[in-house]
Image (cartoon, rainbow, N blue to C red; front, top):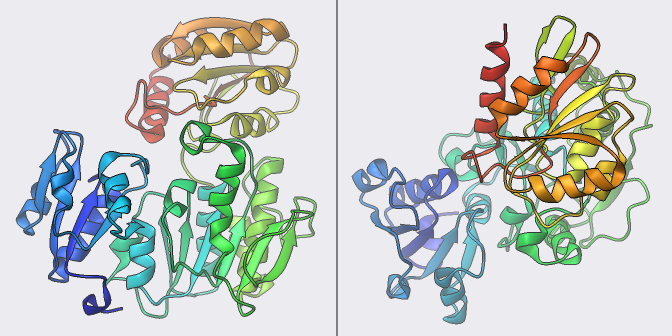
Length: 420
């Protein structure tokens, strides 16, 4: 799509973190007038200013919307913020960064969403496509903005795009050739308001698919929008090879990846090669170190209860020392407490420590109020015995004590490597 087909020449990008910066850079390179806004005064904007982007930080002023033809919203920006709400009230189009990328790229897309397993499955599909010698790019919620591929991706490359609910809020034309829904559990209720609203946002992935496209969904899942050919999967499916990555949840991810790859025309030999060789991704049930018979596992990406439940089920027969807490997402913690086995212990950190502790106490789970990650690692390491697992799987977001889950996982890794 050429710049002349965009709805005007003046755009406001709201949120100047990774996705917003990429969108602003692409639009500036196409000759548009680009202004950008971020609440954070400390956000790095030197590169944008060099490209001619008019940068504003701090307080939101609706005067920034004057003369603007459309708005591009970063995924971390809620829809009710004054600039976004003001744009909608004035009839100014609001797009997600994903929508902008979808409009500017003509590549076939495998879109992958769900509550848990998105990054692992996206990277696994990418590995399978590479095993088949297909050109492929993996982008989206994995940390690589979709718009960063504009002008760099080969025209014949498949794009595997991980899609969060935040990224699907403001899409209009995104139509993946293959759409994948992995699972749905309560998450981000603090932003979406209800589970029903969260589900509806996730299912927008399928809305514009035609009968020539494929929708991959869990076996027995209910109706979905759109007209795509439906393919179902389950963790019990027969696969071309057993996946290298451990855990029953990862077998489900492998089944979904297999179905998606077949829909993209990949043969089973290449799928088998990808399943056998893919090692997983950082911060997802990642073995950091084994020390004196104790395994230390980084699952910092477990930012909701459902993800942590999957991690707890991945170590049958081992006593667990689980580091929990961070910024909660308005979820109940009783199901989490019920999943602890006798002898397991929790080490609580961050803002949600009290709420999680209350649920653990009611279930009779042993716990330690550690406060922060360094204390939790030290306290767990002091009592862990050979055969035990020290598991960082917080069931919460990281933003109370860390900039993101990667920083939290990196700090856990550093602390573990320093253990003597």
